[in-house]
Length: 303
Ligand code: PGA
Image (cartoon, rainbow, N blue to C red; front, side, top):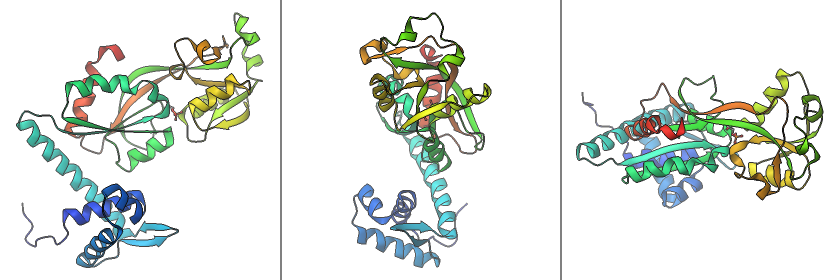
């Protein structure tokens, strides 16, 4: 199949358009692509003229896509993904696994994701890894916008059709400053610890969502004293005596005392969750990502 009429848009123009669309502005796109702003503006003007439609409109301090622009963004994403597959196939035919693994992990996974990626990177030296670490809602948005091939998270969204593969347990525990009096008890009853002041992760965090779901199931309103934007901030604030927190066991050192913390023997905890490796069903998984999934499947240490 070939096009009778040669498209007038070039790959270079489409690349610039995709960067502006994804990053929300010409300045950011010019920084990411190492091109000047006039170059990008010129390419976008030519693209818009050759297609005969407006692709962008001003919005706040940046630009937003018109309906036609959104349509083009989806088309370009599909074209580039096919192109990447082609390049990877050609590299495979030459016996070299090449390409980029685009992976996102929720913030809690930053404590161990490198350990998973290390053997993969060693086995496939030709594969670059582009890792994004964000909270759960931001990772979901990235998947929606097709910015990553695979992602690791605890609570995959139901609104996206995803393949999922459990890769590791993620117990959520209650932490307190070291030598907290409750640490001497055999068990702290739920009613007792549930009335303590809690520090919670920000809106959009999966850890927060899991903790709130836990309380909701028990029909108890948690006392959220403070909201903090990262696991490390939570740990420091708990160690400083600002409250208790429910957090992934994997964010803590093997010996939490070293960080000025202890895990309380709280009745009903840990909340037993798992991390899932996920990818979109409605997209063809790029070969590099398929290799990674296979690698993880065979990696017995993780299951
Ligand atoms: P998050 O991660 O709290 O950093 O969003 C939660 C998760 O493990 O899915």
